[in-house]
Image 1 (tube, rainbow, N blue to C red):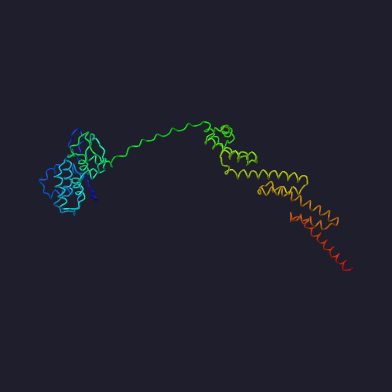
Image 2: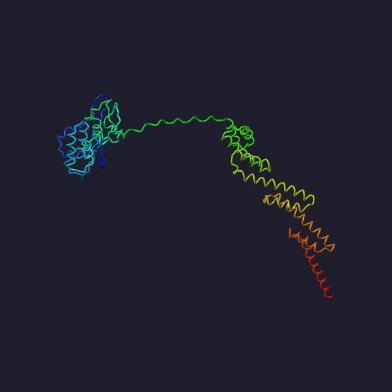
Length: 396
């Protein structure tokens, strides 16, 4: 309703309320417009004087080209505001009209005129709450505090049935439109007291940080078994189970490690985080058992069975150095055994059986020189025997 205002610098001299006090105090040069200086000189002086150097008012800024120099708009508006502060509506209206005669679109003048003419109930609405004036209050201060606009002091006074804003006294009722009622202060929620620290959990945490997993397990496992462990205790013992399991697996203690991983999975309530580790340990345990069998069969000369054992072990754990080493030993034993048996058969003129064994030996170890040499010799003998057999057939 008030339009867009130009900057309005206003200081209204306020006397703190100590019973009944004078709200407005006009500067001497404003109370006596017929001073010794002319109007033109006064206008020029005000235009050149900083607003904060004038005792009593901060005048409205004057745009040099806005109006003819015979009318000082800022001075007229400030005189109108001062008049309204004393309840002198006619005096204020006269000053405002002088401004509008020269500048019909002056936003500040129109805003002041609106405060004098509009129905305050229509302007603010009928809903309000009551405020009791305190010591040091003035209508401008109250308007600024609640309406966030000290220039609305006059229409707020009219809304409250106060004809003269300067007459406000301590304890007097001022009506504040309901829409400006401050939001109630929300009491700050007191922080919940910090839960008591469980000494056992604090100790377990320190032990866990120093990787003393067995000590943590011994400390907390009774709670877990008695279903008296909280979430914190369960989390700590889960970490201890997993940490000790990893340490044991590194040292080759596979079965205890697998057992601890299973305990960690039960405490966690979700075994998915440990399934792969448990499966990996199961393969390692089975591979190690097969290594032992292969070694026993190697010692007893059951090379074919030993080879089956070690190949199955390598399928489970391909990177096992133990299985790889055993495989090489068993393979060398088989190659030597095949060669020795092939020689026996060769000397017994069982050339085809001997050749089959040398083929098997070279399949295992293509670099075995003796098997390769006798394989070629055996093939030559077989070829010569076939030629002799064919020649004999032709003679018949």
